[in-house]
Image 1: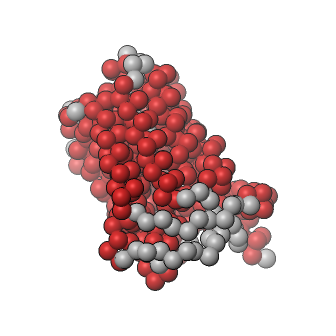
Image 2: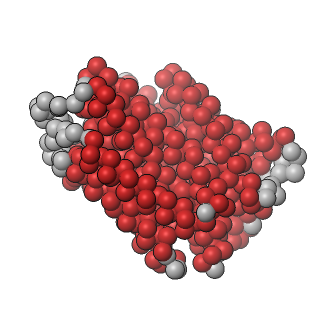
Length: 398
């Protein structure tokens, strides 16, 4: 997002660099897990606080909309600060917020505990990869960034099932206490082992914001919002769907969700290959698979192997669309790609929030069994938008 000033030499051995990047990757895992863990905890939170599953689902909306609204401006405002001190402060904020969540006695306190870390998540996400590249040096910067994103990807895939397993093993409050403790540990590790890195120049946000006047970019951002809405209409309530639609025993839901995340690794690999050829065609392909997967879970719920196939299609498409959307949006601009990428993260969180709302309303009005059909319909809406995006891209090439 920002240009790097001439960096001061880093006194950092290869071993020290690798350790620092590993700390960043583990911290990324904890921070992104804090966002998605709640989805696996929703049934337990709703039961314990005496609220509906739809009301509990709005905690997902709150976190997502906070990231959406505050991500780009906060990242621009804080990216020039000393990165080591910034990351330590972010981890301490997450430790406090997760501790507060564990102590929550009602929905409002829990909502505050979710709002606070949502402010800091995009700041970390937007600066960690750049810092890893500086620590590793030009020759290994790509590998360093990949390691940090491995932590983020692992959180996206495993955060929800880990939350579900934790809810059954140590309770949802215990899960938040665990995250709080681990955040403190990583803050101490960062203080002890991570060297200082060169500060970044302040971001000229208004100059970069010219991309918000480009129709192709705006269309791609809008497409990402609809895609993530389609994904999270059902994904937000996956644990509840497995319990009440597929009749999976509560103690086994976490393992089913772990399998859902693991099969998603295939989607991550296929999506990475497909997006290099054509981001828009890859988007269309995996939207079709997403719609097919979510729409068939309910009718195949009692069909054993076939419901597993439906869940596999859903999981593969769900995971593939994360990097595909990021690449598609960043490729839609010729400058300020970092800001474009951060904006896509905000768009994704807007979609997550909208999806949670739509899914919650669907449960209240038509029941949990209808969530998959609504998700498929929203995916269909995204498919209808692809010709428009393709036309705008063609105009840009003329």
